Length: 202
Length: 202
Image (tube, rainbow over all chains, first blue to last red; front, side, top):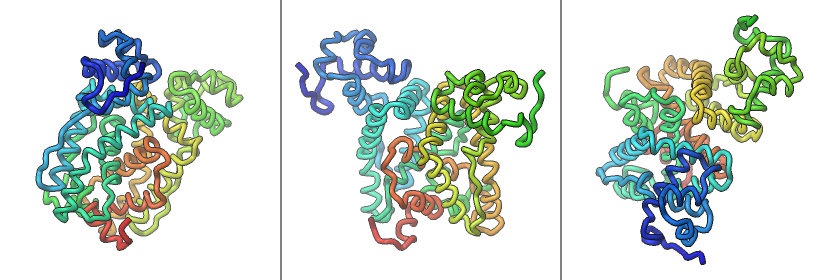
């Protein structure tokens, strides 16, 4: 009865609506209360159709996180690591600044703390996004912008983690220059970034 | 009836047990289900005694977060910013690696996402800790290790945020050298840290 769905092309015709309903319900109800029945009702797609493609809520949620347009952004090639990281930080900040999408991210992170299954989904999601951003680091290494033994995962942790602390925890205390200052610090180091950037002291 | 309690010296005789019970219950039940009645029962201190000092659960929780020994650590003066930051990162990692204390931190952060009152408590807690760590940055600026226009809050966000991502989200994927690599990156910048540190490529 369960049919294998393949990558982005697989899934039923109203796939995008199902994913949107899934993430909306995750955001509004949290992981515990999310059900396939609820998604069916919210998306207007028959429950049996959803079950034909996804046999459990965690399978459905995995695909929704990975493939929904709501949590996705494209990164342009700006020609420099600093430019590319600034784009990445700004895209993440824009995502977190959008109340609807922030609610989904928060529900996923809260769920990850409480449920092993949700944590695995979040880790898959982060791995997938990290994979999509690999070209940024490959280009930088090819250009000589980044040493070959640098650890891009550490950089991404520090960048995403700082935005999480500032936007989700401290909320409302985000300077306009936050992403630029963050990227400068990660690029140049805290000892040099403030003086190197040549801007006046704050 | 409510008596003002002053700083760390104030509060009833069995203050430490009350704080421990409060944080234990936050960790096991979450912010929603935490009650002064529960803390009284768990600590064996009379409910009216607790109410004499703290008129609400958020007041009690604020003092427990700020003053309990469970979430506190002292930072030695190592003589360098790199050494001091490494101590700080290792103390935070040790706190998150301890399952009991991690549960408390997780409950506070989960609560902060869901409840305005809990978020304010977490922000007060972070501000308090940031204030306690100010001597690290003051010493570094006095020594010339850190430019006077550097932003220590950004540094702390990136450090705490990276540890949060690695320990609480990715859990179990923490290399022994993670804190050292993190501090090197924040000190020297990602472009230089890997080569400057002179260790072999991973």
